[in-house]
Length: 380
Ligand code: UD1
Image 1 (cartoon, rainbow, N blue to C red):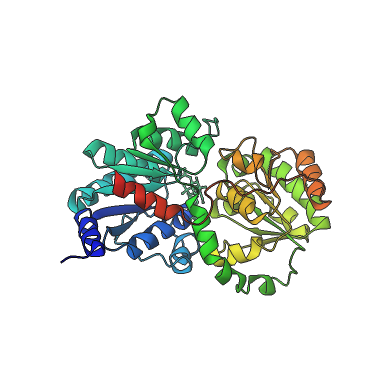
Image 2: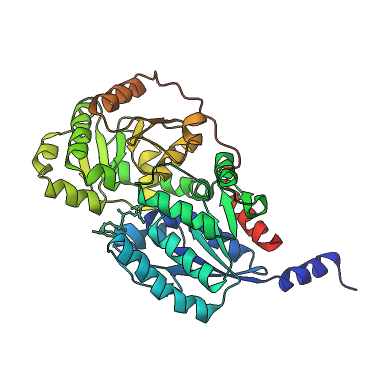
């Protein structure tokens, strides 16, 4: 007679799902890694494939993340590379379509808000292949951000919308999205932090930079609205000069930003600011090993606002808005914009410990989001 476990195994086998997991740019890798990992663990239920669009391609913008996050090598690489928004989005679509036709997956998962996210979701929608959007429902309400357009459109055309926080559910409902398409699953990036933190603590990065724990700040800056505009970038650099006199700032520089600094002739000025230390982009483990020991983070990234909230590190966001308001309401994030004085005032307040922060970890940012996504796929 078959045992109960055997028959459950049998039922599970019946619902084996083949899933294409799309990655394209740096902020995608830490979201997809836990999902693929969980699918491999649940091998009776899932056959995962990884498709890399090649939107990011430098070793330090891509390859290192596969190693650091134990992400299997892509099954398919579209090698799209850089280009204008239209050219890049179109190239991903053109190259992804034949892959989808050949592989015939049950589901495609896209994550985040980069051009590859929208491009692949759109190909799925046109071919009638089911697509799930992980990190759905976030809204900055700033349509000059390319990511905001990607978010709005991807959510409109995806079959299942996996949200990281309940404000995202509200945004979707306000846009008329039916409740049965929305699944509040939590923040999958936090799965990666929890899994990798012990390894990241072993990173030699702080020793290599000769900095003591809690005695430095970390900066990231790459938004076109900040770095492609000379005046804005100059205001930010002015603030950094001032802050770095009091606390060294380690700045792993995104390729876009390095190009802008050279183009606008800010290189020498930055060189003179001795406390401002520009370094090459870091991999996942070194970067986590760095900022998890910092006293303050300054950033215009989306993900880092969430990562600092979970780790309880004060974060100043150098933007006028955020699509992640929960990091301000519950976490350690403060939106400071790009005004020089506002940035320095907030930084000194943070260093004096007078920025109040509730330091709550938002609901379901618990390291188990990937499994909730897989459960939802099984139930759909
Ligand atoms: C993209 C995402 C952004 C994300 C960011 C993280 C969109 C619209 N934007 O912005 O949401 O926060 O990734 O980095 O999808 N480059 C390299 N090497 C690379 C990749 C890019 O040198 O491996 C340079 C190229 O000059 C390229 C420029 O960076 O033109 C911008 O790359 P792109 O992918 O267009 O946008 P990001 O600014 O990286």
